[in-house]
Amino acid sequence: MTFKTSEPAFRFRQGTRPLLISMPHVGTHVPSALAVRLTPEAQQVPDTDWHLERLYDFAAALGASVLAATHSRYVIDLNRPPDGASLYPGQSVTGLCPTDTFDDTPIYADGNLPDALETDARREAVWQPYHAKLAAELARIKARHGVVALWDAHSIRSVLPRFFEGKLPDFNLGTAQGKSCDPMLSARLLDVAQAAPGFTAVLNGRFTGGYITRFYGQPSQGIHAVQLEMTQSSYMEESLPFDYLPNVAASVRPHVRRMLETVLDFVEAQPRKV
Image (cartoon, rainbow, N blue to C red; front, side):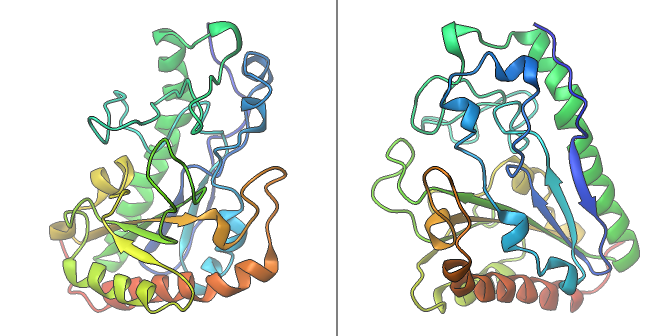
């Protein structure tokens, strides 16, 4: 199978301050030639990180740059290594070009899975442009400010037995077990998250950060990367039609904004790295 798409790999808005927000799983586009191969369930792209651009719409006021995926993670997962290596060896995970949903049901009807050539084509068309832009923007910000923060924004259903027991904490901060950002920053972020009334939080719990956090975070070089995996129940309906719930989201948005303000306060106080 070959792969073609007419959709750009990302949406991007450049900011003015040393913060880049990456949203690798907000995309919903599946090219029509691929969509017809998917099961009816998969055609609904249920494992999308829905509505994050709306939830984070204060990013412009903060001066942050925002990079958002356009294609569904079912096309290719932008938060996986390009070689498809597992981020959590020994645990159930979905791959670079996923073949099953979070509910462990098939994505492809009739076993019509992508082969190596199709995977390569998807990587070239979607994965590489996204990561090239991400790397270029980090370099631009660091050249201008001498330091940069990368915030990898995610959301997920609060209950997913395949991946974790019980209900997930609402704020799941990941810093690659302390390797992707300064520990003082992660401690401050956890304090903000734990102080949010009505919400729960954890640092480096079930989600310690995916490929983006782990690969780009280099605190010794002035690049601080943090992943936030939020429960979708804190701002939206977790089942079809996956609607955004403004009244529910209004309770969580100030705390997310405060976390980003904390990131900016921290990095803007840091000495320049060359």
